[in-house]
Image (cartoon, rainbow, N blue to C red; front, side):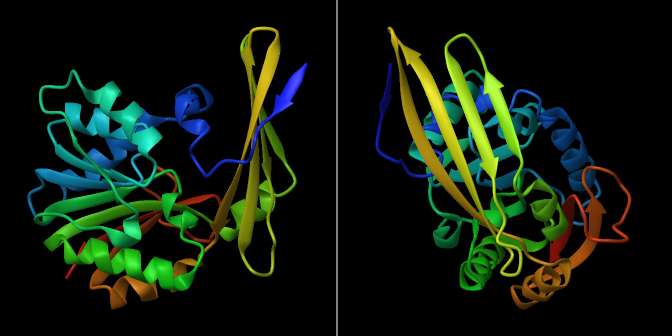
Length: 253
């Protein structure tokens, strides 16, 4: 027997199961790539801001590499999981519950990162511009802003596909959609968790938008950044065409 609950906000139902769904994600690869880029930064980097930190997997690894972390996310559930994960670190990150469009720090940082396509969740150009302005405001001159986005081609390739996760006590269905012409994407996540003899169902709708590299370069410049490189995923290869996941490195001017 299955009970249908009300729809919930993004990363509310997912907070408690997110790490299980993302167990194949190459966080180690992200941490190595980011660490390598930060070590080449014109500005020596000690304090790093992470936007959309989720459950803190990347923050944990960057902290182990010696960086002091400030981690922001708009989901209290995700932040709670992150704080628990990082509690035993010698210098745990500072966790702040904020939307990246409303970022408000007490001081400046030498670098910022935003991974796992978190910027794609900014579904209006106005929100994108505001978020970039806020990052720039709290970034020291010469600091690096490193982020990745899903390309428009990646959204199109994923449209209509389904990913599944199944265990003894949980079943998750992630359905990917893409509007196409408007570069908008709607993803539906259904989570079925076993409780006694029943399954509890919770559903989230996730909204994202694809932004062309040319537009991102333009908006970064307006916010006070100069793009140093756009790479294909975690590789060191600069993009020749916009497909897959794009990794940006931008320097605060």
